[in-house]
Length: 193
Image (cartoon, rainbow, N blue to C red):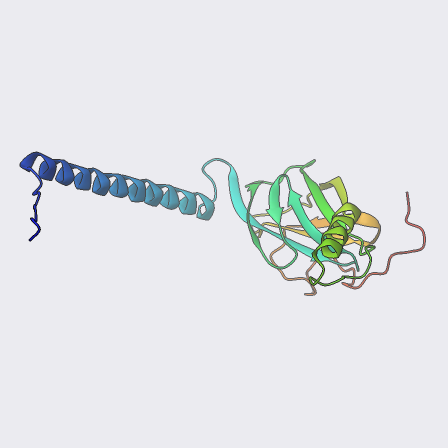
């Protein structure tokens, strides 16, 4: 017959476990509390104009060309051509000379035909070719005058790597929208220098 030994934790280890449990609860409370405070400050900072002289708004993009716009930024704030991206800070009051630096990456669609995923080496070679064909561009553009109402910044990617921006709240294609170029612009044989 075998002997069974039961080892019961001492009172000291029970206190240790209780202290560890309390420390874990305190850490979770502190972490969640700090995250909550940060979230409240972040949301209130984006929703209230004034205070520091700036207000937050979305960054949007419209691609008027046949080339893919992989990504872009405005003054370092990311944007997308498939919807709104938060956020860019714009001064509460427009002033002459207000500019935006727009950087973007274009896929000129010059890579060979997609080989599929079946042959990994062919796919990796193709992927490298595609990424090598990407072209990076940047320019500085004037931000048009705006008043009390502004809705972030909208970047329009036009033929010949030209850029126009607006802060108007009306949507593209509405009568008051200042940028009238069609969405399906064709690249001219020769771009102006």
